[in-house]
Amino acid sequence: MITGPEHVSSPDSDIRTKGPTMYRHDPSERIAIFIDGENIHYSAKHMNMRLDYIKMCKALAGDRRLIRATFYTAISNQSEGKIDFINFLRLNGFRVVTKELRSFTEAETQQRFFRGNLDLDIAIDIYEMLPGLDTVILCSGDGDFVRLVESVSRHGKHVEVCALREMTSTDLIAVSDEYIDLGTMRDHLALDAPPPERREDGPPQSQIRNDLDSARIDYNAIEY
Image 1: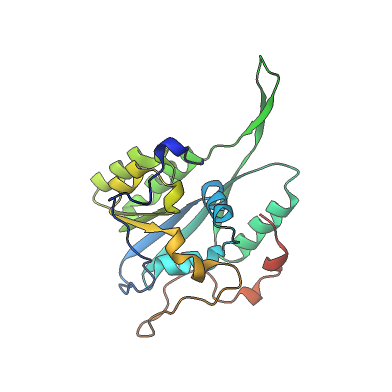
Image 2: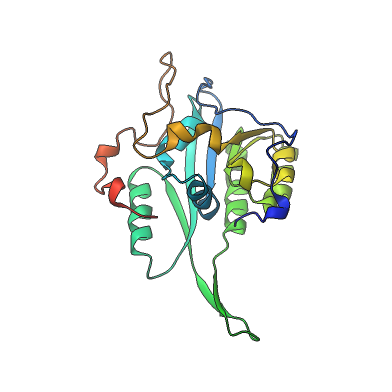
């Protein structure tokens, strides 16, 4: 989901913001990344960029042990471009969870709208993986996740939230152990941008494939 303006932090907020974790070097730390696809997609549109999700996961993981990266999105049977994008992610090591968009008609106005909320799916997957993790990385600015983050923290797990500052709930930032502003990583994470520098004194731990050329789909031709 996309956070409404009443829950968005201001640029002058004193809520903490920390930089990207790409320089972390603790191969024993087990992490998993959970990506709210709609929220992060619209954050990228707000920044007028096409986001490279592989680079994003590598930057967030650093040299830590990435157990899994999961992308959540709603789809319709007309979403051919999105299906190609999903296939690309799966070919490159992501787990992808989808939900079909359902249409609803408002009784008074007869206006048709669509809904495909995956918040519950994200929460369930986090809790199922929690015993085998040290750190949960939630890529979303949605304030609906505040209670989830609080609960995960009470279970003794480190929680990092990554999203665009202008589209992030201040309450979500406040309850996280670490907040990463997606905007600070923009130059590294745009599609076709040079990758961020990485430390060389340790083996890469990410399960995300290293070479985009290995994919059978041209990432540059895909529209989300």
